[in-house]
Each structure stands twice: as C-alpha cells, then as structure tokens.
Image (cartoon, rainbow over all chains, first blue to last red; front, side, top):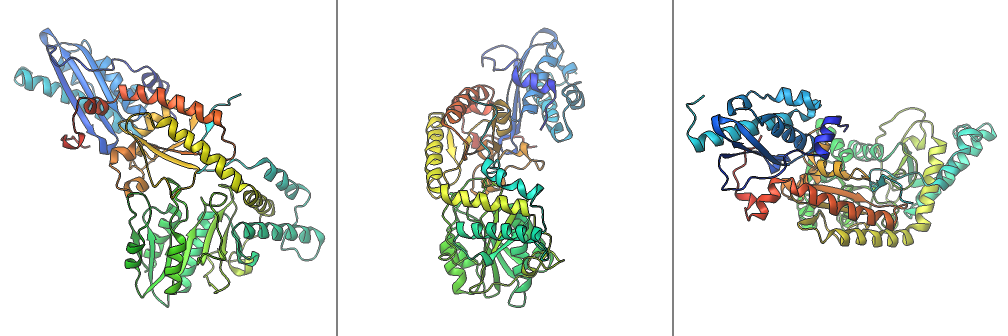
Length: 131
Length: 403
C-alpha cells in the first residue's frame, strides 16, 4: 500500500502522543474501536475556561492511517471550543491525509473519537444543555 | 555490506537461483524449439531438456518421471487435481474433504465444486495448526471421493501428518491430494512410501521461475483425472498447451539443486530461525503462531501483542515480510489461518510472518532483531491497549465500541 506524504509524516512523527494524568482538571477521554477490528483510538482533551480545548493527546492501536488520523485530530481540536471540535468531519480528515477508500474507516474512527471525548466531557461536567 | 531492504518473505516467492537462470537462458534464445515438434532437431533438443527436467522433479520426490505432469504452477495443479479427480470419480460419490487452513487455490476450487453439486467438508485444525486425525476420520463418509490436505502451510509453516492421512484414505479407496507448493526443498518427500495420489508443486517457492509447476499423478494404483485444459493433448491429455521449455528447464534445475542441497540448507536456516526467535523472545508478550516442532525451519510467524501488524510493517520497512493483519488485505479481515488456530483477533491483527531462505544471512537476522526491538517499543508507547495492560486492565472485560 502506498501512503501519502502526510500519512507518513504523522506516522513517523506523531503529534501529541500520550495520556494526561488522571487527576488533572478538565480531562475527558474518548475511546473508540475494538481490538478485534484492528484499531482502537484513545483521544483525550483538556478543556479550559469557556469550553476551549487547551490540549489534546492520543494513543492509537491500528494501521498507519489510523495513527495519522488520530495524530491529525489532536492538532485540529486544540484551540477550538468543544462545540467547534464537533464540526470536524471525517471527510476533512480523509481529504487532508489523502486516505484511499479502503482507509476511510480510519477517518470515521477519528471523528468518532472526538465525539466520544466531547460526550465524556459533557457527562462529567453536566453540560449537555449548554450547546 | 548489508543491503536494504532485507528479504524475509521467501514463502511468498524466492529469487531464481543464478545457477537456475543460467541454465534457462539458452532455451529462450538458441534452443527455442517446440518440444512437441517431432520432425527436426530443434524439437528433439527441447524435448530432451523437458524430459531431463521431468526426471529431476521426479527424483526430488522419489516418483517416476511418467507421473509428473507440467502445469503453470501450484494453483493450476490444485485445480486440475481436485476438480479433475472429483469430476472423474463423481459416479462413486460427491463428497470432498479439506481443511480450513488450506491455500485459497484449494479452498476456492472446493467452492467451485460445491457450485457443481459436490458437498465439501472444511475441517478445523487444532490450536497448533495441525489436523487432528480423529476429527479427520470422523469426517469421512462412504461417498467421500477426494481428500485434499496441504503438506506445509504457507502462513505458519506447520507440517500436516500426510503419511497417516494417506494410509487412512488408501484403506478406504479415497483419492488423496496434497498441495506441496511450500514443501519442496524444505521437507523430505518420498512418494514411493507416502500413500498420496496427487501432489501439487511449483518452481518459484524453490528458487525456480514463476509460471511453472507440476502435478504428480500416481500410476500404481492408477489415478484418473478429467482434464481441465483442452487442446493438443499434451502431457498425455492431462494438460494441453505448448510446454514452456525454458521454465521447465528452470524448474528441473531448481529441484535438482534442492535435492542436493536441502540437507545442509535446512540446518543452516534452522540455525538462523532459532537465532531470530531467541533474539525476539526477550520482547514482552510475543507469541509464536502454529506448532514450533511440526514445522519447517524456514517459517517464523509471530504475534507482537498490542501492536497492529500493518503499522509494524510500516515501521520495519527495511524488512520485506508479510502480516496477517486485516489492513494488509482488501477484505479488512485478519488472516483466516490465524483465526482458525483460535487466536484472539487482536493477536491475528498483530502477526508478522518471517520466512527465511537460501540467501538469508546471520547479519540480516541480527539487523532484523535490532530493528524489531526498537520499533515494537515505539509502537507500544503509541498503543492504548499496551497502556491498559500495563495498568492491569484485562482487555477481555472491556466493553468495546465495535465498528
């Protein structure tokens, strides 16, 4: 399989790898996928005042495209409010990374990871109504 | 000097041995005759070369040259053997038995027989990849006419008990076909002793050229086949089509070299394989797929838990290997062979097949060991599964959001 330059770049130099400390303030976690399907993404966001995502970290078990997709979204969500983060669509991720059709599910998983992380934040902070 | 990338995918194909290539070339240029031409020396010369090669193929497996039929490769041999025997003996019954871990060339041929009205039993293997003889016996019926079991598995290298299976089949008058594409030059094959009726071979897994293979068709007791390729009646009607003299010469030379060098080569490769296994065994959570004893020394199929196979392939692109990961296939399904071993899906997704061969060196193995140590560590740092396991989470208890 041939990879795009951007996939290779994110794969070789993944941005924001890691996990936040459990006791840190404003942390929410989205874990999507399943080992049986060959990919699991964990996206964590650190939400500050006004619902702005100040920082993000990820860990991904999956193919190069899955790693690249999650690395990319950690860059994209930073500085956005949680509502704005939900505007990120899998098609944008796929386009940015030039994913081939067989890898589109990686971008869908990355979008799902954002949704899951935001949902986790809202659950913890009771903000379902603020949107 | 180490040359990158390092080829460790000898079960996919092997390079043509330079000695084989040298022997082939004259048959493309000067000695180009059609072996079926009976009226001049060009034809006689080509025919002599074809018959010499046939003898070499027969000698490697202790058969009579008259029992060797040229084909285009193991896929065609499997098609001719299984469809040919099933169709010829259909009057005796319509039941065929094979194994779930066979190559697609056998499985898809059996699927075609099902479309033609045959019934096929696909037997499961044990966790070590080997067929349980009791399970096998229980699957046989009075109307079973053909059994097909491979000698060496292409993904995990395990050696099926074909001597025992042959005895069982012969006692019941069932035609026994063996796909030996991955076996020649790796295990001793003695067709005078084995009760095998049909055996498929190809050249390109044994340092010969691609596009040429053979089918062994037993003469005593005689095995009959319905031809699948019609035309000029070549190969005693079993397989029509002008013989590819240069390819055949290549296969003959490759099999001759295999016969002469197999003993020493096998021990050298076993040493390298053991070196590789030992070098990787200090990595945490590494699992060998398939039985390690009943196995050719050329194959090491390993799962590196919590690291996905395709991302590992990207990380070790200096090594030409293959993976059972779904992502390396179009189907998005992990290897059906590893699943048949009862491996958890994540271990199937995390598997790498290393296959060693004639030109593999100790230096290459050492490079591979070092590279894998570096990259497995890096990918596990990226893996949420690894993190969870380190924290003491039992992954089987996690409610995954499957997609």
